[in-house]
Image (cartoon, rainbow, N blue to C red; front, side):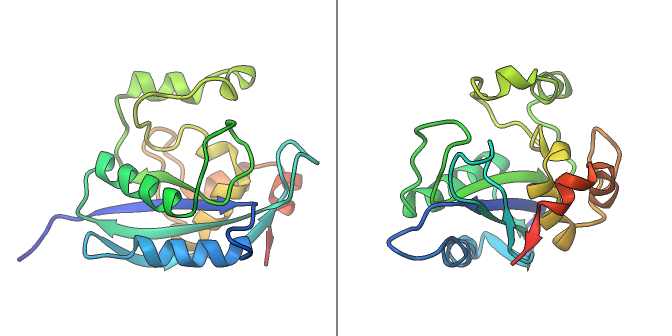
Length: 189
């Protein structure tokens, strides 16, 4: 029986050991946990070392991106990501804090959720507010995707031609628009 499937991109990252295992091993295991009848893995990026933000606040991160197709709804997919994070003892103590695993839904087909106005509000949130404010609803695509080399560079490995539904630019173009020093700080492992 045919199931309608959506194309998605998931960002993975972490910078803390999980039960003594390095972050790259955690990311590999997380990809394995995501794979199911409902989530078909289509590609996994290289793994990248990225500097902790703010600089010196902790160990560097390892980041990757996963292209997949899913029969789950966006909300169900987010719940699945939270289940995988919980399996690796992800604690949400501090926004943008250190973690064993972070799994973000970066893109879900060409969806803009919950709507263009709310998406734009989160995308345009002043930098000082970004660390304090947490949305109580799913925002897609990820509202700061276009600003983050640690997300875009791995995404370019698995979905370089995906076009941002609001900005109307491909991942490749968004990467090229990042400052050179930010791109250079994301290094393949």
